[in-house]
Image (cartoon, rainbow, N blue to C red; front, top):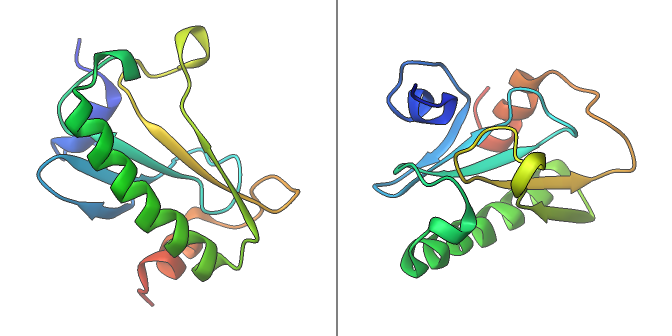
Length: 122
């Protein structure tokens, strides 16, 4: 059975997409822990970090650096955590990186409102 992220990448499941290139997609987490909770997902299915080719790890980190800066600036976050779950803590078995702005609170705003702020759309 195809995973949720593969379906999102194919356009079969809607998402709040912030960025896409030939290797990765950057989307808003549908169930955010904090406002601005963003995911970086490789387009090709890999279960875990250990399965990714080194070149793809470098590319994901390059995109992460762009979006860490973008998210912190646009959401006025002073801190941000980067998280990669592994093993049982990885709910969707398709590698993905979490970017989590730190505010000291859980998500408080509507995902669409935060998406518009991050993506510069009114």
